[in-house]
Image (cartoon, rainbow, N blue to C red; front, side, top):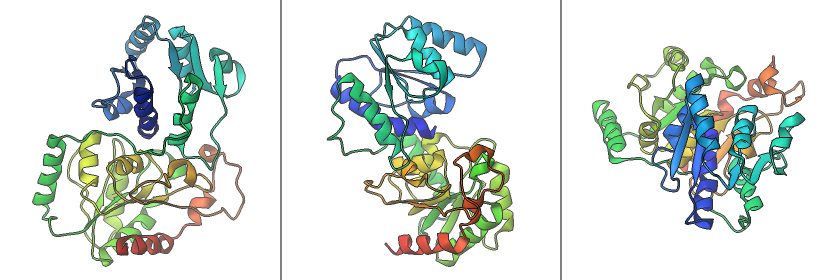
Length: 324
């Protein structure tokens, strides 16, 4: 979901560069929801991760008559789509092994000091698109009137109209991105101590993590307000004065909603996920791990970089942001 949101500046620029082209986007379930109302695409092709769905997608791409494919992810699964497209131009990210042979043009892997949306945008250069002068890297996510009406009901039912609300996303399905429920509870109580109401968010499969944080808090957060769509969550976040959370897709929803963000994340990756040019300030908190780092996060056993971040570190940044 986050990767798809980060591709929306490239989608927007592709439409500007090729106003009469047919532009389709292939993605998985949550990405399809992100792009459901994207005004720059002709069609969104969704892989539902079932055999029948995958075969239909492969058949659709093979019959699509595409002139070019830009593979932002360049995984085994997406390389398969690029290959069956038989497009004359197939752009991918350089990796290891035979997958590179699928592509007619390879771009280098993203450097850790480059914002991911910029890297995806710059992949269009192979198609002759001048991306150097593109300064707008805002993320596109359509929020409709029904989404805002649902958010309004949540505000009314919980009497939030006169309160400053800070959204906190203390969840992740990836263990190596989890900062810890006790730390998040301390931060959320600190937010309440600053005179704001904490609103905890979660996605599918993450509700138990939020329940644990809420159970550890001294103050009372808002967290059990029912399931939302991605656009519905964006409508909730755009009513908040600040978003704080783990490194993950919800951060990019908040950015698309125009909300200032503070992300807690792994050492050195902050610039990858943070738009330093955004109108709403995006901040990233990380710390060097005492035991060193090999940048193999999924296999990390000690999570030293996350452990080095304290709740007070986060609250200092929150206080500064709320004053601003």
